[in-house]
Image (cartoon, rainbow, N blue to C red):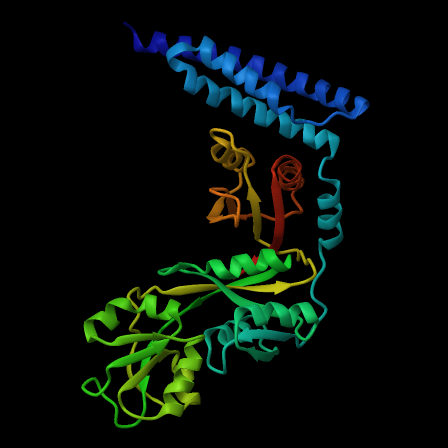
Length: 375
């Protein structure tokens, strides 16, 4: 058996497949024109299922593989049809109106959860040096401040490189239907701090936000401290300062230690020395600046085998790099899930807009969260 001859046979078959593929795409264009003329929807789910079932049976032992190939063909065909039909008109208009729009605020009021010295405060100042910071107690309060107009923007953490996603914040973004205006990754270096006279022999309890406690759990275990959660790292420093005594310590930033007059007993105590938290800035209005480089979505999927694979494959077909995917159970809907997706891109690219609009048209639920700059 000659391997070169086998490869020549494969090349010949591939050329035939390519020729048939191009014919199929030409047919998809003609189908789209017919659907425009007769005002028909692009997706005919029942027909697709019937075709895939037939293909699977005819392919025998390769049935599963054949279904993958033909489902991809259908997805590509529908993308062509969606583009020609200009589906997702409302989303297209929303994106078009926001392109090039920038916040016209020189010194924005930014709602931040926590007291002075909190990491959200540091993120806000890093992104907007002239910002006026408004401290609130809870993440929910950040959203309410933006909703009421008391703040122009809000800043909230969405994920940590060690402890993972802050799922409550994602839920709040969807609940309030806000957009992500910008994002920043902030290196987080946690310090152990306590009142004058406290040391490792006197301390038995450590206070901080649950995320910080999680990020420092190895250190806490090693020192045999009892962890006590509170609303914010900087608030933990304030509590330790106000309580006094030498048996408690806080985990927070060094800035918080300075502000609340505590002694830093140890630095950089988090388990991961590359510890980074990603913060997003939320807004009621959609802004898409010229240098936007990240896009965020949320959507649910139909109960069809392979629906997640097929949806994600469409981003690959469009040449888009996924940077995050997160799933959250939908309340009161059994084992139904909502997916959060981040990917690199800018909506000045028409092909990316076409993809979003086709997904918006086809998926059970779809929410566009923004196209923004992340640094």
